[in-house]
Figure (cartoon, rainbow, N blue to C red):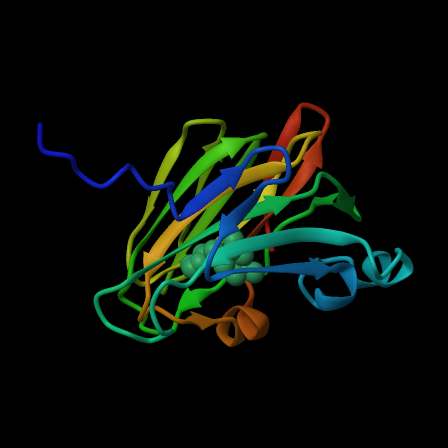
Length: 190
Ligand code: PAN
Ligand code: ZN
């Protein structure tokens, strides 16, 4: 019988105990309260909290050069549970630099919300729960919010030429925010 090469181990693994990707070309970074000035409505509450508190971490693989057309990047984000002045812990949020590029988010663990905003500042909020899959169309800013008591973990896949434009959200923000109400998350005008 002809013999073939043995099966190879996968090049990357998601470690559900840590929420991190493991393998080659993986880079992990954390966003702490100190990195998130101006993101939450209650800036006084944010600056009074321990600045080293990790709000979220992203573990991403970049198998091709950033900006290359035709490749894909993949990242796993873990957002810790918590609130700042009644507003849930969340990501900074961004448009893509190449604005018409889309993205998929796939929720793995926890409870949360995906806030989507188009260029006319019209928003839509989708509930995230383990297994929920979210298509983020091009020209839509996106931010994720942990509305639960445990870490919210999701995978994301985006084109390698998309880039991240944080500046537009830093200046203009999103038009809504998610705050903790008596019966769960409430969407309020920003
Ligand atoms: C995600 C996000 C990640 C962190 O991988 O980059 O969840 O959110 P911020 O980038 O807004 O801080 C993604 O949307 N990539 O395109
Ligand atoms: Zn994105």
